[in-house]
Image (tube, rainbow, N blue to C red; front, side, top):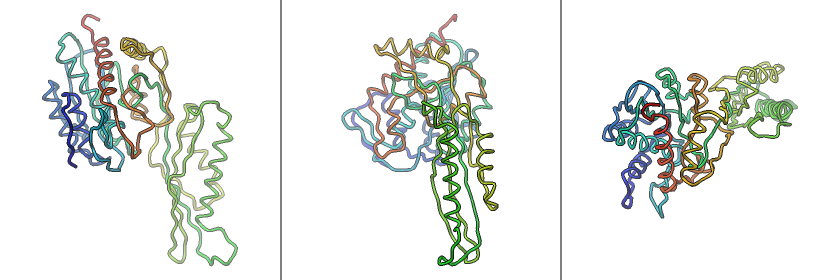
Length: 362
């Protein structure tokens, strides 16, 4: 992919260069090695780790803050360009903007010299895949005092939590038969099961006022085929889980719903519980001060999607939030774009946050 850009600041050039490198989940190697080179040039000790993550390290000791972004994107090529101060391209919002802002803020801290402890920037692989391979690897590598996960929230807002996720492949087989005879096809049986799932979710949590507290099932794919003797229907289901309904009990409920479909099987493709931090967390308060210092009132949000915060948050048990520039409504869309001015404001906020967390003598 070739991209031409107008004159840019060094931080903007880093963002645009990263977005210009395609990095669909599972194919992040080029982006990772490129980012490692950039981080080394900015004063960070950088390498590609065993999972394929791009890692940059500044300093040693405590406190340790991990800035956990992700390199990968969903498929879909968007011509990379800057027009009117806005960067267009796949990953500009979700979530190379946040990752580049992390690198920019860490580099500013390195140039300041008045800090203590360690800052680790991690550009994870496979965040957009059910595996979350990069985050699972990072979870075992670090034990930070603070964690900031890179996801778009608008530079004035901090994300306190994400819903959990349960992704399944449902498979059902029935004997073949003539369409003129009364019987239930494999496709019809799986659709009937899906109807039960929808009804069960509505009965379980439909009364909850907040979407964040509701169980949200989605039918992603449904296909069927026949070999002349048997019909097989296969569907992919994705359930967004509220904090009160973790993956284990939800999976047990889904199996019970299909008890009278003898051939139904449910294969778990990926799962993680919801994660939520408190509004009074010291990290949340630090962000609030940094945003107010920029002349804006901070917003605190809960999101109905899932992020690597769900993976590392419960493991590390430290104050953790998600933050990054951009409009999350543009995630995964053909209209993905990021204002360079907003990107710069996010770096300003992150620099202030890191400066406070790593202030000498604290």
